[in-house]
Length: 360
Ligand code: FAD
Image (cartoon, rainbow, N blue to C red; front, side, top):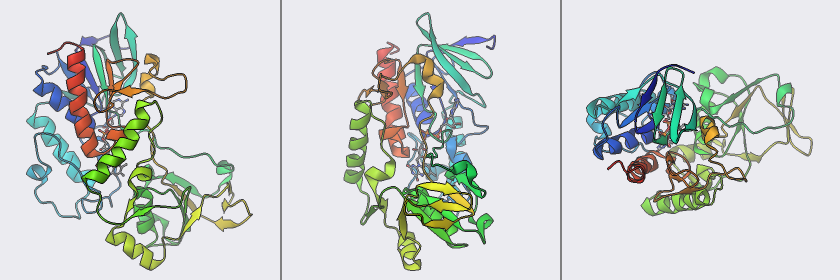
C-alpha cells in the first residue's frame, strides 16, 4: 500500500545467481536500466543467499561455483585459496559484477505480493510499487527452509535447528547431535559435528554414494529428470536423489572414522531424544534438520500459477516459463537449482520473455 508507483517492462525479483544472469541478458538484449528492467533484492548486500552461508562453507568445500555470464570469478577474487569463506568471496564477486554491468539492483527491497491489474503486473514491495509487463522470479530457496513434521517435536527439550541456522560445530561440543538428511549439506555438517562430539545420522532412504566424477553427461541426465517433472507440474525432486552423493576424500575419511553409519528415520520425537517404531530411543541434545529448502513463491499466490493438483506446469526451452501465465518466468528452481543451471535459465528467461512481450 505504498503511494509511489513506477513503471518498467520487466521486474527481476532476487539478485542471486539466477537474477543476475537474467539481468545481464536483459541488458544485452537492449532493455534500458529502470525503464526496461529493474532487479529487486531483499538482502542488505550483494551476494544472494551466499552471504548467509555458514562460515565453514569455503571455496574448498563448495561443489563448484559457476561463473556468471561475462565476468570470471577469478578476475575478481583471484586464485583465492580453499580456506576463503564462500560467504565472503561470492558476495565480493556479485558486487563487482553488479557494478561492472551497471545493473539496476535495488536493496533492501522485499517483494510482498505480485498481482494483476488492468492487464499489468503490480509488484508490491515494502518500499514502493512497480507496474510491469513481465516478471522473472529468482527468489531462490533460502527463505523457505523445510523441516518435516514428526510427532512430538514440540515436546523435545533440547535444541532443534535447520541447516540455515548452523554456524559452527564448536557450539555442540559435549552434546549428542542427531543429524537428519541425506543431501550434501547433511553429510558436510555430519563431518564437522562428528569431529567435536558424538552423532547419530538418520535419512529416509539409504544414501547413494556415487564413485567417480560428476561429468557433463551425468549433470545433463540429472537435469533432464527434474525438467521432465516440472513440465508435468510435479514438484522437483531433491537434488541428491538425482545426483547421488559424490565420494570425496572427506567422505573416505568419514568412512574410516566410522561416522557414516546411517539409521532409517525415527518415528517420533520424545522429551530427550528420538524414537523408532520398535521403541528404541536415542538420547539427543540437538536435532539438526538438514532437510533442505522449498521454493519461496508465496508472494506470487494472487497470480494463481498453480494447477488444481497444486503444481506449477512449466514450459519453454529450459522449463522456466509458467504455462498458465507466459509473462512469468521462474529461474533457479528444480532443473536450474545450481549456479550453472541458474545461469542458463537466466539466459532462456530473458530471451523468451522479451520475445513474448515484443520488447525487441
Ligand atoms: P539465491 O542465491 O537464494 O538468491 C535469491 C535472492 O532473492 C536472495 O538475495 C534473496 O534475498 C532474494 N529474495 C528472496 N525472496 C525475496 C522477496 N520476496 N523479495 C525480494 N527479494 C527476495 N550450487 C552450485 O552450483 N555449487 C555449489 O557449490 C552450491 N553449494 C550450495 C551450498 C548450499 C549450502 C546451498 C543451500 C546451495 C548450494 N548450491 C550450490 C545451490 C546454489 O546455491 C543455488 O542453486 C544458486 O546459487 C541459487 O541462486 P538463486 O539466484 O536461485 O538464489
